[in-house]
Length: 382
Image (tube, rainbow, N blue to C red; front, side):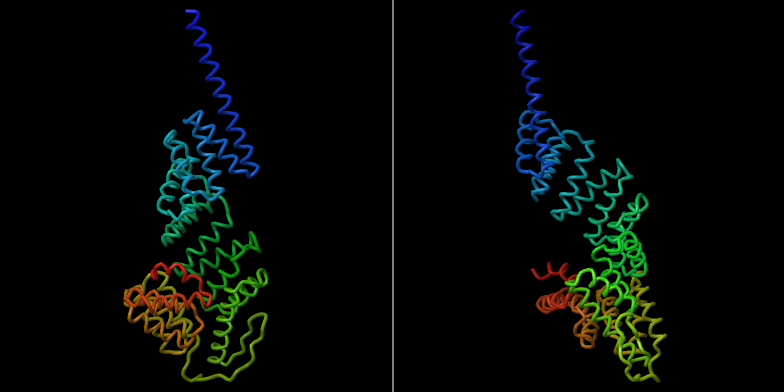
């Protein structure tokens, strides 16, 4: 009986010592993690886990250190183990979702963020992360709903910016401009916001407003090639518009010289602008047949409007009329050989029509001209 008692006491001491050692390694790991010594932190968390394999927090913090070192696959394994130990560990789901975003497993990330939101629907950050995953999957309207929820909880620069980008993707340019403007009220120096708002204004043919935003983007970042390229596009359109109307156009910083009007008896600039805006509105609502009719009206009024040719091509592309789309993009490029977006969508249309070689040449030309959005379609060229 005496020996049994001593054995039990010794076992208790060993367990206690083990617990203390586990806690010591875990504490040391936290200290190293806070000091950005993540390799050292991983070693300590690993020793802690070797002593107590059921320590979900040790797995989570080891996973976070792996995240910091860019080892996202290893981090996902640790977060998964923490969830196996405790399926209610929401912080593990959230962290695993973040790692899945980093390896572009957007569907898996959404599933993890769903779990977190189900448990805590008041975490704005998780809505933003889930919205970003949906945005990357081109589920723009679903992404917008997530950003809406995030902004209802708390105004947030990232949510405004990403929601604006998603709205631009569905051609809701006026709403996108509203979001960029709110963002700039919060942070006038937010990188990319002036450039992106300029793009939205360019799509709405607000050429003076676009130039003003590109000027500000270049002021903030003199190396912003995208802003410089698109400002040139906007200025060219201002010149074309002035040539057609005979009016002097001012870009608010640079005065454009007066050029005699041409074909004033044929062109109806106000009517042209009305039909153009109607086409953009129809396009935004995915009413592509209506958009084609509106842009055709613009072209009938002014066959030199390369943007109308491009938009009509885009609408035909969405109706899977790839041959018709390519012809319209051909005309748009003939009128403005420097407009990268026309090359981009002509390239996509060619690829889908079976002309992979021609399509890939166009996509690379779009990127060369500064239209970086074409890069997301380069997978077609592999």
